[in-house]
Structures are given as C-alpha cells and as structure tokens.
Image 1: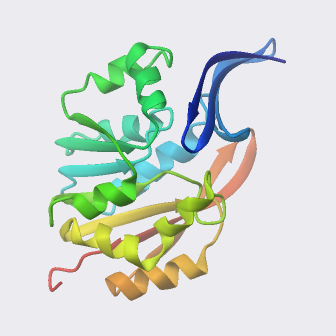
Image 2: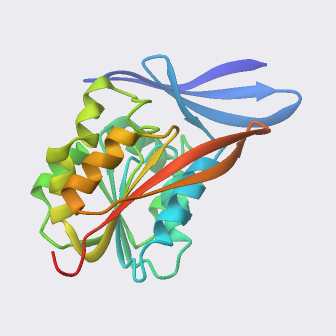
Length: 227
C-alpha cells in the first residue's frame, strides 16, 4: 500500500494533510489527517451516513440544518439526500479544507457545494452558534470529532460542555434537535445535555467499518415546545 500526498496546509491548529491511499487490493481512496492523526477517509463512510440519517429521523420537518464539520463532505451529502431539507449551513473551521472541496482537490467536492441549498461558513462552530439568530434551525449535527472521547483538537472538549450546548439550544426552533455522534458511550455528555435541554436520548447504532462491527452512539436532545 502506498500513500501519496495530495495537499497540505499549515493552520492555527496545526497541520492538515490530504493524501491518496493506493492499494492494489482495494479502491484508491482519500484520507484526511490533522497533526498526523487520522480524521476520516473516503473508503469508510458508513458512520457519517448513519449520523445524518439517524439525526434526520429525529425531526419531523428538518427544513434548516446545521452540519458542524465539513470533513470530506459525506455527512453533508447524506443530509442533502433528504428532500425535506431546504437549507444546510455547513460550519467548518479550516479554510483549506473548504478550498480543497471547492477546487476539486477532493473530487466530489464541487458537485456537493454546488447544491443551491448549501451555505458554507468558515468559522469555529462555538462562535457561529453564539452569533446565530435564535430559533433559526431545526437540526444541528455535531460532526467535528468522534465524540468527547476522540477529539481532533483538545480545544474541542468545550463543544461537549454546558455553555456551548446552551448556545446551540438557543438557535433551535421548538421541536428542534441537537444530535451528537460518539464512537463510544459518553455518560457525562448525556448528563450535561439532559441538564441543558431537560431531555436526552442515547441510542446505540451498529456500523460496519473495515469489515468489523462497531457500535456508535447518537445523543439527541430536543427543544420542547414549552421551552
């Protein structure tokens, strides 16, 4: 197996690298790494698709959706496949990653970003939520890490704590849902979400990754109509 670097960027958070994995026994794929740590690839996209589909199922009318974290675009792609969705705001902190998607360095990027329902915001999701209009969205999908136990950057720990969760709740309409995907059970996150929203539902999902059965968790909290 051979890895060929396709693109590299130095950011405030460190090094971002896109590389191509060439294996004579498997399809060629792209891999994204941050500071040397594997983030995601185009070979295994089941968890991203499962996050979007499970989160969308929580909301009757997901007209306006926030996807926190662009990644390689697969969560966004699954959200756009739902015809109930009228607009998607993708909040991504790395300008380089957005540029790679727009330029076709990530080949499927231009077609995804050409969807007229998509708006890309280059910003920290915490700042974006703090500045967003109240009751603007029906669904927020937090997809910047694999949950609080698997952070891409240490500063992301704040995204699973009460101040950020309260800011996210303010941007949701009555009945709106904050959905957080986690690669492991996260009881502290569950308790914190419950303290903010007054409810939380933790649901395990079986995902097949690299021919292995993995169990992920979706934590979903809803803004009640009485809130």
